[in-house]
Image 1 (cartoon, helix red, strand yellow):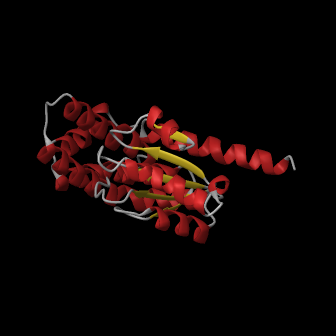
Image 2 (image 1 turned 120 degrees about the vertical axis):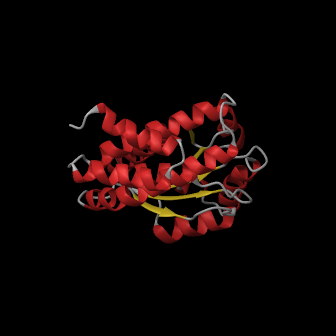
Length: 224
């Protein structure tokens, strides 16, 4: 087990927006035989929680957040291939299509959730950013998804989350998919108001909700 300070180097590099240092720190931990999931949980996610807390407290601003995002992505480039390789060793727990809603170009939260879902054994299809409702549904059908996961990072794009529900209803397919939403301005109240199935307050929360949803679906299937 590495010393606590080894994780601190990675955390600080991400928080300071030092992309090359963040990748080097992640690679150093992996070279020391630290499990990629530990690098993610004990370093990268800790750093992004710190960024989120400081941003919400107005102690850092958008340029610093964007630099931290770049550093996180640099570290993730080192860790992701190892996470994906480990996830392939397990049978898929379910299939998820995930994306950021129409008119929203922010991806960091969605990317973190997608990474954790892969680590948990899900088959994940990342649709990227600015995804219209019709694409969420078409891709969910194409991949035989269990879950549609949508993210919004702005209050002005949150209404597009409801479009997914309405599009599913118009196609008579609302009951075919578990609809999970999340993002900084999103709330449980918003999920209820638009008819989503669940709201993930954090990336980890979202993964647990996805696991619960698939377990419940399979439980219902086996009872018939």
